[in-house]
Structure formats: structure tokens, C-alpha cells
Image (cartoon, rainbow, N blue to C red):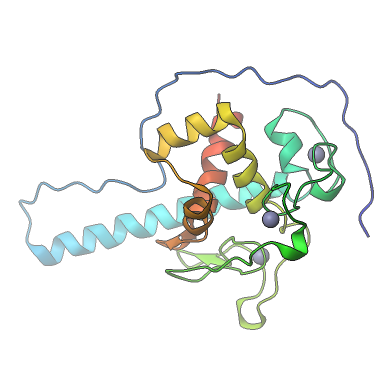
Length: 209
Ligand SMILES: [Zn+2]
Ligand SMILES: [Zn+2]
Ligand SMILES: [Zn+2]
């Protein structure tokens, strides 16, 4: 049962802060290259770095989902506090619940196909990362209450909203057409989908700015 607990109060449109240059830091771009050490040692250092990155990322995902599992991500992106599910969001009537297209309903939305690794096929988030438990039960493919309807709605809202889309493109240094975006967010790389990278980026934009 979805209850409509709309605790939304003031509706502040978020000011689009254009032009803040993002460095492509975060979710794992660079390892160093300088090598005065032999290959084997270097591999161990890289593996260690990778493990640390995965553990840190697992912590961030849990922290983020602690908030998201009880909030409407679309309202969260607009700085509105609301506890309803995406289906009850006032910006949603007439749109597909998953991809926010006006051309079809969620039952006709093309199913997500994840490529490149494992993730929970119900929500697109990892169940484990870096040996750390994140959510659900991998052995039986179980997700967790309140985890669905977060990744896709958030990604598509960002992609379909021009101010956000510009910053998204600037951060990830690329552009997508709709099919490319659909494919890209479902691609698993180093344990997480690109959709989760978008969530973590948006989280960082809002919570730390
Ligand atoms: Zn909402
Ligand atoms: Zn759709
Ligand atoms: Zn899940």
C-alpha cells in the first residue's frame, strides 16, 4: 500500500547554478601511473585502491538510500520534501513511471537490460560492493522495500530537465540520445550501474553544495 503522505510545504524552485566546473573526480576515474615499483606490487596497490573505492562507494550508497527509500526522488531533486512514491508525484500525471515519457505507460516501457556485471534487476542498485552488504538478498534476487522507483526516475528526470541535463553532460563529458541514455544507465562498470553514478553525482550536487 502506498500512502500519500505529502508533507510538502514550501516549494522552492532550486536555483540553477550554472557553470560550476565539476572535476571528473569521483566515482573512480584515475589511478596513478608513475611506476618505480614492479608490476606485481603495482597490481596489488591498484587492487587495494579499487577495494577502498568500492568500500567508500558502498558507504555512500547506503547513506543516500537511507534518505531516498522514504522520499520521492523527483521532489528531492526539486528541493521539495515529500514522502509519496513517484506514482503520486504531482509532476507525473500523463508520464511513464519509469522513463517519464509521455508516449507510453510503464507497462509498455522497454524493460531494462543490465550489461557488464551484476546488480539488483529490480532497482538497478548493487546488492553487494567491495565485499560489503548493501541491500536485498542476492541468492534469491530479493530487493528491499522502498528501493525501486529511485534510480530510473532520478536519472530520467535529470536527463529530461535542461539545467540538470547540461550539468550531467558536463560532468560525465558526453551526450546521449534517448536510446543511448537508456543503454548507458543500465551498464554495470566496476560493480555499479552508471545510473547509480548519476544518483551519487546528484546526491553530491545537492547535499554537499
Ligand atoms: Zn514527488
Ligand atoms: Zn517508459
Ligand atoms: Zn534492489
